[in-house]
Image 1: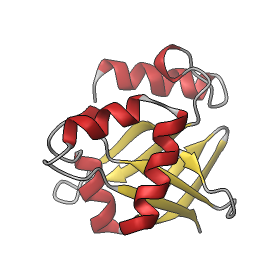
Image 2 (image 1 turned 90 degrees about the horizontal axis):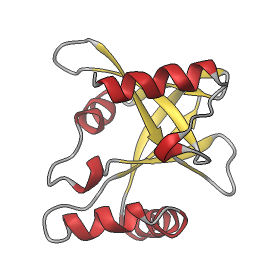
Image 3 (image 1 turned 180 degrees about the vertical axis):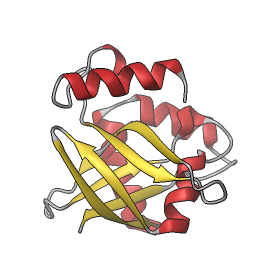
Image 4 (image 1 turned 60 degrees about the vertical axis):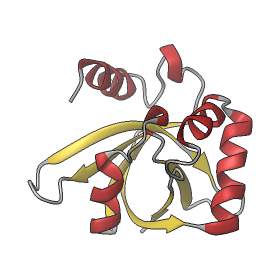
Length: 139
């Protein structure tokens, strides 16, 4: 894990889910997942978008900062179908489901509207890959 991720995780836990820097004021969670080959547990801080009609569901975006490949956590999550989330001071299990088609496009567009960096990631990946959107639903 990078030092930057570790610092973000420590700050998140010390401040009941709030952090400064590039994530200040943004909805942030810590996503626990296991390597599909290694079985090792990883924790990834990431922004999310809450579902407007289902309080049990949030969406995460496998943007990898606009890189040409998906992040490892994406494959780990889609292979496992479940994960653990830390949100604020709560920790809970979620089921994982990939959103595709028009629903994916609508959800991603809303995230890009709220946080323009996501629009930039989509420009970087145009013609290379479509950034996956995953629904994390509290069990």
